[in-house]
Structures are given as C-alpha cells and as structure tokens.
Amino acid sequence: MVSFPFALEAFRVLSVLIILLSVFLCIIFPVVELPPIKGRYNVTMVDLYIPVHTAKDNYSVGEKTYINARLIYPTKEPAKVHLPYLHPITALKICKILIEVALPAPLSELTCINHGLMLIHIYLAKPFAKPLDKLDEEQQDSSGTGKIPIAIFSHGLIGNSSMYTHQCLSLASNGTVVLQIEHTDKSAVGVHMQDGSFLPYDETISKLDKDRKFAEKVRARRKQMEHRIAEMITAREEMTKWNDNKVYAYDLDMKLVNLSFVGSLDLKNAISIGHSFGGGTAIAVVSRRPDLFGSVVALDPMTDWMPDDCRKDFFRVIEDKLKKDSSAMKYNGGTIGYDVEKPSNDQDSINIEMDRVDMCGTKESCSISKSVHNKEMLLLFSQEWETHKVGSISLIQHMHSTGKFGPNKVDYENKKVIGNATNGNEGNLSDVGIIAGMNHPGFSDVCMLGPVRILRAIGVIGKNNPIESADIISARIIDFVMSVQQKD
Image (cartoon, rainbow, N blue to C red; front, side, top):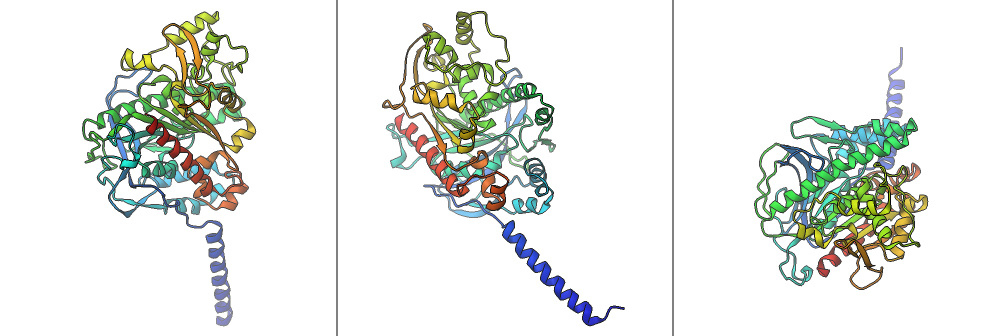
C-alpha cells in the first residue's frame, strides 16, 4: 500500500513537471497575433458568397454558382472588435489539412498547433462598417474625384484567402478595396461552399511528382489555372456592378449583406495580385482580359503553370518573332513546352497569337492594349526563388534589364513592333525586385503565425525576421499602387 506522504510528494513532482512542460510549450508554440496594420485608414473584413450568373464555357465558372471571397476595405469607423482570422465554420478542418500537408513529422501530429491558429483574432472595425466614400485629398489623382482603387487577390497552392490577410489589410488601410478569392479548383487548402459542403485540397496532382509524372502534373496545374482565371474574371465583372448598385452577396449565414460602394470605386485602376500559383494567375488574367485591370502585382509567380497563350504574351515570344530580335533570350514554352503543337512557321504563329480569343468587352477597349506588358507590373521574388532560379526568374530579369518588361509599343493592328518602353524611361513604373533573406512562404501570413526558430529550422522562413520582410513587401506594393494611381 502506497503511503500518503509518498503519494503527495509524487503529486507535487508531477505538478511541477506539468508546469514546466506548459512553460516549455508556451515558449516553443507561443500564442501569436498578426502585427498591427500601419495605414491611413481603419479597415474591416467580411467573408462572402457572391452569386454569379454566367453561361458555362471555357472562360466562365458556370451558371448559378458562387464566388467564395474575403472582402477587406477601408472605413473611417473606429476599430473596436476582434474578428477571427480563420473562416469560423471550417477553421478546424482547414488547420488540420494545412498542418498535415505543409509540416513534416512529428510536427504534423501536434494538434495544439491547430488550436493555436484558431485563437488568432484581428482588431478591426465592425463587420459591414460603412466603407470609405473617397480617398483623402493628398491621395487623389489629377481628376480629384478621390475614387478608391480595387484589387483582386489570388492565393497560392494549398492556401486560402485567410493566409494573405496581413498584406491585404495593409493595402486596404492605404485606400484600396481588396477582394480575396477562395479558388474552387481544389488547389486551396479547403473551401466551405455555399451549400454547406466542404471542398478539400486535392492531393492527387501533388502525388504525380512522387510518381515522377512531372509533365502530367504541370498540365494539370495549367488546367487548374484556367479555372482560376475564370473566377478572377467573374469576380472583377461583379465588382464593376458594385459601382452602380449595392453589393449583391451573402454572408456566412446566407443572409443578403447591406453594403454599398456605389459611385466610389476606381475601376480603371483595378489591380490583379497574387502569390505563387496565384501570382501566375494574376499575370495570366490580365493577359486574357487587359480591359479589366490596370496593373499587376505578382509575388513569386509560378509562370510555368500559366496557359500557353498567356506565357507567350508574358515572355514576348510573338513580339520577338515580329522584331526578329536575335539578342532575345529564347523561351520554348517552359519546363514541358507548349500544350498545343506549334504552328508550322513563324508567320502562322504570329497570326494565331494576334487572333487569339478576344475576351474584351468591346473592340475599342482591346485595341488600346492587348498585352499584359501594356500594363504596369510589379514582380517581387523571394531570395529562395532567386537562388534556385524558379519561375523563369532569369528570363524575367533579362527582360527587365533590357527594357522589355512593362509598357511596350507594339502595333498589333499592323502586326509589327515599333519599339519597347525602355526600363528606366520616364513613365514606366514596372519593376522586378528581390526580397533578401526571405523564403517563398514569406509572402503569406504563415511565417508570422508560428515560432520563428522552428519555422526557420524546417525552411519555411529565411534569415530575415518575417515581420520585417512583411513590412518591406507592404511598402513596395503600396508605393507601386499609389504611383500607378497618380500616373493616371
């Protein structure tokens, strides 16, 4: 029989061990919060289901479907509520999938990480606060209208709208209405659909790498990007309607929202923005629909997964053939070439490109600018991708250094090149930059939502402090957006 004094002593030792373990876990897995936003305006965010009614074809998402999105916008109402960082309905499912897919064992088995992420809240203005009706005077362009630019954000692979909240809050706090799309191509970590079902991440494409079926994987990702492009186009067209009528969307309880941006949006300065898979999507959608966007911000863009026509446009394949530029770096379609067999000769290739599906609303709107390079572009790469030469970065840097990146002068009507805007010339704001000491995930919130030592040890973050890197990224994006707006 165990004596009472011995049992009491054992209990005391056990209590001390539990306390020490708790302290250890608090140090290793601290409760984290996103850093405060340093902007001109207060902001708020709401999760929406946006109904769309478009005919189903290769370039639309289908009839009577919904766009899942997080809307972040500036307001003059004060910050006074703590809003959940993750989608409250599916937070636990999303955390579980994210941890299992993204983290190595044994970290993937620690369920405490899931609950830590679910505790994160952000101090913002109340949901559905009255939106800002116009920009402050010092932010306004020459027109003096004070209209507010809009941005549509495309998330990366195994991501979702929540994971880019910090950068989007920063952009919104400086006067931009940001719509973060939750893509339904099964590349997201998980999506709560309008009908109550849950759309999980599809791991079958990722497994093609393990089976050494690299070409099949790239083709599958390119097919997914077609779906993403369609969702970006549809979302952008819906935002056009918001300038004339109240927002037609539902909240998470499927109640119509009471929100209006009527007459206040600057549709001309719409920004297409995204990271990784979403960075490629951001470029591709502007290549397809230059009439809908005014500029591009792409963060570590996965250009190899862009469709054939968009890659040809972005890497100036057709233009170099027109100009017969022998100094151009040759682009042969990416890691697996083109999905469609090349035409028999250069002139046929040129004709096909000039006659590619014209998705613009009117002939007049498209005749001004048929190439993504006629839009201002900011491409930011992590040092990790620059070191490993991912995303065709060498070719993009060459284009930038030789004046072939950004607004050009191509006579598409007469099918000839009359010259390119040279990098550094007055009026060309396009730029390519490297964020030193940062790894690929650093463009998302992931690096700020966990213990730095562990995340650095497993390669998620680089040498730089993730919050400092986030500040650098925010500053670069905001300076670019404001410069484009003032230019116009």
